[in-house]
Length: 211
Image 1 (cartoon, rainbow, N blue to C red):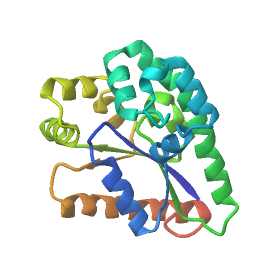
Image 2 (spheres, helix red, strand yellow; image 1 turned 180 degrees about the vertical axis):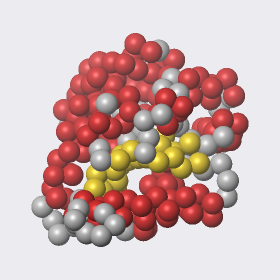
Image 3 (tube, helix red, strand yellow; image 1 turned 60 degrees about the vertical axis):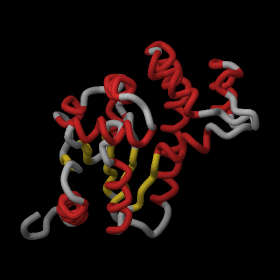
């Protein structure tokens, strides 16, 4: 199995890329889905976050209101770092648990681990390959504004809260640019997937001709 990290900044098109990889046959583990599950009442992660941030981040049904929490951490770097310290170890542990469980199954293809903060957390160092998704900055800004119905200033604040994508690209094995059409984006993803399959074959049969 080839372990491949997939990351990208907010509104870069990472989720779309992840979906295409899944269509092509990769197994995808999504860190954001795991975080949603860990935020449910009754989990240790929920208890830590609720205690650290207080009742203001809780919805009437006692679930964590991710929009309120997001507004807090995007405006306060210290609280953003606190949240990361509380949540990331739990997310990483669950990612690894699911990856190990998959290795026990008859699946030996491409495993995509989709995580927005893979580089920031250092988790990318555990991957065989790293893919970074990017798009034109103006398009990224428009996507954020449309997605959350927020101002340009607020959208720029959210962009600036993340590590610059250029820093991530420097350590990437592959880059997907989603600025163009869906067809152009898919073309890039399909090419990368073919190369990942080829790499997996080389690892399985290192003595084969052309390996």
